[in-house]
Amino acid sequence: MSTPQQPATDAPHFLIENFEHGVIFRINRPHKLNAITKEIKRGLDQCLTDAETRGLRAIILTGTGERAFCAGTDLAEWPTMPVEERAASSDMARNFLFRLSGSKVISIAAMNGLAFGGGLELAMGCTFRVAASHVRVALPEIKLGLIPAYAGTQYLTALVGRARALEMMLTGKPVSAGDALAMGLVNRVAPEGASALDGARAFAAEVCGHSPVAIAAVRAAVDAAGPQVTRAGLDFEGEQVRRVARSDDAREGVAAFLEKRPAKFTGR
Image (tube, rainbow, N blue to C red):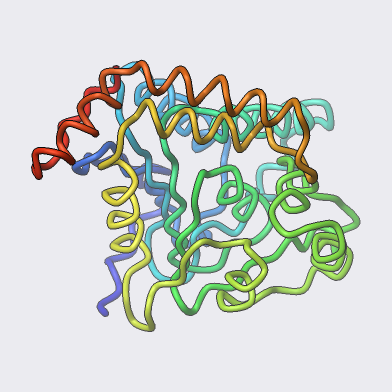
């Protein structure tokens, strides 16, 4: 696989392109391992707003090159930022990731290279994660006397459990793509030599071919589930079942099955 031409240091920090089901947001700083800047944070926020406004089905997040999806926060910005400004910047990223994880727009991280610190947190805020086979992931902030600042303590624990989350965060050691898949940190690993972006596109097509109404209901019901089955969770699922059953999409889905034709979902 050829390596894309490296953009100049004055190139845009991110690029946005369309694909069949939405947009691809590409962090474009390979010379800095696609480290996150204030400009990228603002771009991500605006990209999600635009996608929601336009009613797009999916956003794919990736990076330029094959070395890094995103190496985390660009610490070169820190000396010019007062402590309070740094804290506000972290708050902005944390709030964005919470918004991203709850958005109706499906988000997929196409992890084309290493994902460290804020880069892994960005991936964890997505609905799904597809990793290239050579990817390594880590939350190494402990080595700098810091802790994950973009909700990593929360997302990692939710995805892999308390014991594994503590081990990753208190050692800071990288984890391979295969181990990340085994622990549930990523959803899929692309075959060796294959593109994570191609895998993410295929994932988007697989999910977005289904009813938006049913997708939203499944996600809401899963969000309501806790570590144990509860009556409240069951009741919430029941509410979603009844709501979806009354939708146009449900009627179309059943009719298409009986008529042996592809369903045409409208999201109503």
